[in-house]
Length: 261
Image 1 (cartoon, rainbow, N blue to C red):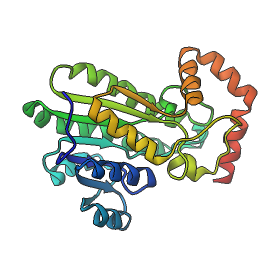
Image 2: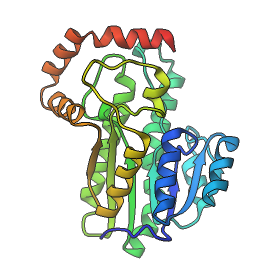
Image 3: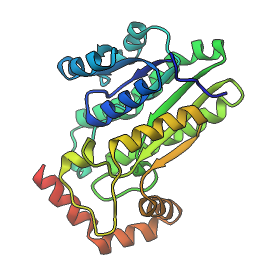
């Protein structure tokens, strides 16, 4: 069963950033009734006014936050788990507190939100859960072990949950952006890509989120062809992928990015 987004009640996390803004606007254009969330109230104010959305502040690193957020939002037809922390750098440079925070925001919170919303969705026989992942959840790179851990986990969770919910009327999708320009972690990093590797816009990712819901797609890789091919090959042959990245100097590029950030 697919969801009609007209008048659908949608809860969107991570709405304070540019990618969250693009997703919110795309959903609003489809007629959705939005509840947008983030850690900073002031960053939500203008967007909530523009879209007529309900704004709720939440720090998803807090264990209680997902349950509290669902209570405040009320009944929802669609949840889009977009909030995430970067988690870029050598593992030895991460404190245990930072590891816990990355795991909480990127992985535990989406799982907890899904767990909390599912009983009502199953009772209605309709609903949709969208998890915004990354190509880093398909293939890993040096300096991204922590981020990939959360995004690999999110993809596996969503895949298993989609199979669990088959035939219930509740859909599950994972949208995995490549390198997003103008907004988000890659854009904020100032990192340069090798020649021939293209980016996608926040609006393209947002359109993929809408398409995933309307067509009940299990996975969408929101990236140009060359990035999709590289991610697929990296998944099928991780040793070859690692060798190619060493030749391309991926570790050095990652170290330069960390030094500049």
